[in-house]
Image (cartoon, rainbow, N blue to C red; front, side, top):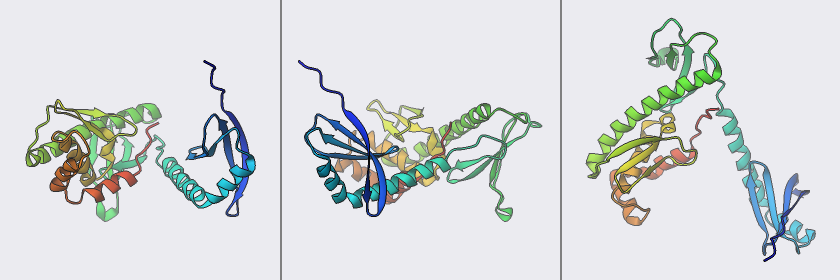
Length: 252
């Protein structure tokens, strides 16, 4: 059996809709043209036998799709950059859908949370018993530990609220740090919830809680599963969109 030839990758340019675009052309052993847009931009995968003129013509036909998805990718990148936190005294991040300001308070012996002050438009403030000049990595770790404690306590309370009404009981709750998954449920009655949900409003968190509790009755996404979710949360589609469209801070 002969080894498959490695793909040939080249950089090309083309004008689409009045915009000059660069793209990666990947030639490999395949039968059809493929188009993908990611963090690095547009990639076109083509059979080795397809002429460049055919590729250019296909790109012209896909102009609207390409420009739309490149714009969306650019917006996602901007949102991700804006979500990066500069770990310093005075940094802010979302907590339960509202701003939370981080302040170093070396005079304190323990962490304190000050409520928001609507009259002066001051957000809630987390006072950390850390010395001035604390390294960014240590500050990030302290904030993350606090958020995780808050997440577990809140998740337990929301599960207790919804589980009884849905006629289910969980065996164990675990926190997750997954990058692309908000929750999961196992047939043994255990549930995992992503601690980063603590950045969202409670109504959005409740959607994930109800979703995973429903899996304890239906371990699938069948119509029967969605009927359980609908009965427990009639506006679940709106809350699901809020979860999908939300921007989560980048902890790095």
